[in-house]
Image 1 (cartoon, rainbow, N blue to C red):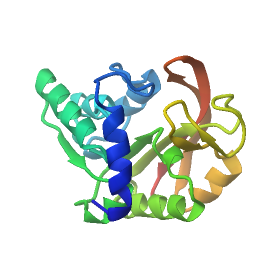
Image 2 (cartoon, rainbow, N blue to C red):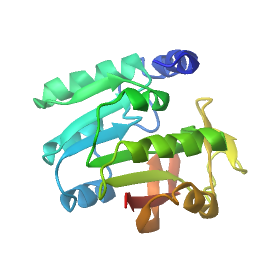
Image 3 (cartoon, one colour):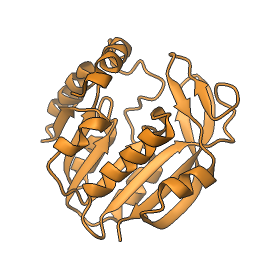
Length: 211
């Protein structure tokens, strides 16, 4: 793992001390994701910031050769336990986004559900998206879902601090459009995303394709 992410790994490890306790962890994958997966071509798939791996497992159930990556060793251990419980063969890896160059591509589909928003600095966000793009073949799909700047969660402003002390980026669509300019935008819409302890919050859904 990249040295810059070792402290982050320890922080998230504390949050994954109890399975299901985090406000972003849901056993049932979002319905919007399941509907999308049904219409995507099968192949290798990568779920970045997979947490306990429930979305990754949904990809595996749908027929993808699924890989999940997360910075937290405890999250990866929980994800592996869930995979064993469900009898699914999924590769869960302790990786940060900076480790993407070490991943063996290509992947037909890469997704991050509420992960891009955890990368705050604009240069890091641009580098992350470029690394994602490099792991996709021409025609490969990338889904990113991140809280909308219109969300009332955790105050106001582009960068906010969530309940568990995590800093999140609430980017406006203009920033996201510029960030994803190397892709073909297939879908851009606003959806409602659940957060335990809060009402569902608006988030931007970008379904992208590498030209």
